[in-house]
Amino acid sequence: MTQVLAKYGWDDQKVKGFRAALLDWYDQNKRDLPWRRTRNPYYIWISEIMLQQTQVATVIPYFERFITALPTIEALANVDEQELLLLWQGLGYYSRARNLKVAAQQIMEHHQGQMPQTMPELLKLKGIGPYTAAAIGSMAFDLVEPAIDGNLLRVTARMFELDADISKPSSRKIFAEILYELIDPERPGDFNQAMMDLGATVMTPTNYYPEDSPIKAYDQSFINETAALYPVKKKKIKNTKHQMLAYRIQDVKGSVLYRQHTADELLTGLWHYPIFEYDIVLDSATEDELLTPLEDYFEVLGLGSLKLKLMMNPSQMIVALPKVKHVFSHRTWNLQVVPVQLEDDLQALIAGSQGLTTTASDQEHPISTLQQKLQARWEGVNR
Image (cartoon, rainbow, N blue to C red; front, side, top):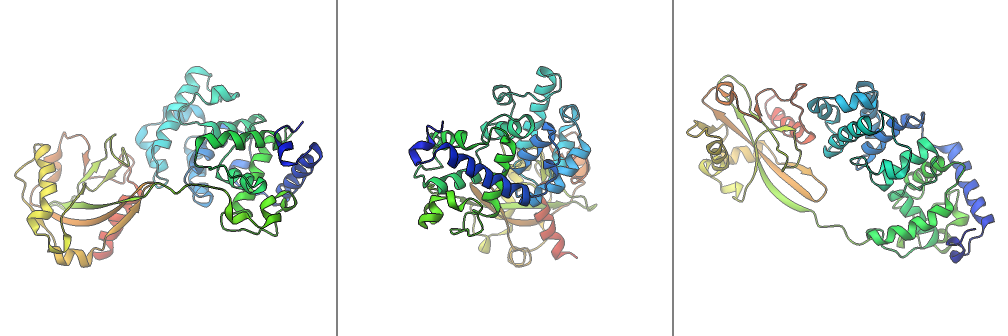
C-alpha cells in the first residue's frame, strides 16, 4: 500500500506506471559510466566518493587511474598517504581520500576485507553517510534504499510540488517517506541511477519545462508549469573573500621552497609555495611590507636573518603576475604570487626540517590544483 503517496493522490497502479516509465527510459538512455559496468561494491564506493563535489566527466579518468593503482580494498588500506594524495591530486576536498583509507582499514579489521552489506554496518565506515551507504547498498547488494542526492531531491520536489526546504535536515524525512514508496523493490539500484540520470540530464536545475521527460505525466510541476518554484532552498552561506600572498622563494642555485599544509589548514598534506593572508594595500606596498609575513614565518622556524629580496618591484609584480583566484566551498582566495630571491642555499637551510622541501610535484610531495595554478602563473611570465 502507498500510505504516504495516497496523500498525493497516488495509488499502487500509478506507482507501477511511474516505475515502468522511468526504468524503460533508463534502459534506453542510461549513461555509460565505468562504475556502472560492475556490481563490485569497492568500485561503486570509490566512484560515489569521487562524485561528491565533482562532475562526472572529471571523475572518469581519476576513477580509472585510482582502481588501476589500488584495485582492492586491501591495497587501499595499505597505501602510503602521499601516494594516495597523488592519485587524488586535482580532485580537491582531500579529506575524502583520507577517509577512504581509514574506511578500508575498518573493513580489513572488522569485515575480513569484504564490504559490509547492511545499512547499519555501511554507516559505521569513515566518510560514508546515508546517501553513499544507500548508493552502495542498492547498486551492489539490491538493498531497497533510496540514495537521496541533489538530483533525487529536485526530481521529487517537482513531481509532488513539495514546499519542504531541502537545505533543512528535517525535510529529509518528507522526501525519504515518498521515495521509499516510489523505489522499485526489484531494481533498487537501477531506480536510484535512473532518478540521478533524469535529474542530471532532463529535469535539470534550469530546465523548467522538460518536454522530453519520460515521467512528465507524473510530474505535477510540469502539468502546472511550476517547476521554477522547486525545489525550495534557502540561500547558501555567503562565500568570504581572502587576499593572500603566495611566496615563490628561489635560492642562489635555482631551488624553490615548498611548504606542506598542516592538519588545521585547507589542503592538508599538500605542498605549496608558502601562503599567508595579508591586509596591506598591494598597489602602494613597499618591499619591506611585502616581505614581513615571510620574515615572521622564518623567524618562527628559527631561520631568522635570511637575506631576502623581491625579484620584481611591487608595481611591476602586480602587472606581470595577475592574481590567481581559487574557490573553496565557503571561501575564495585571491592570491598574489610574490617572487623572492634568497641569497642562501635552501637545501642546507631546511635540512632536517619537517614540512619543507625543494622537490614538490614528485611521488612523495603531491601538489594541489591551486599550486598548479600558481606555478602556471609564474611560468607564463618566464617562458
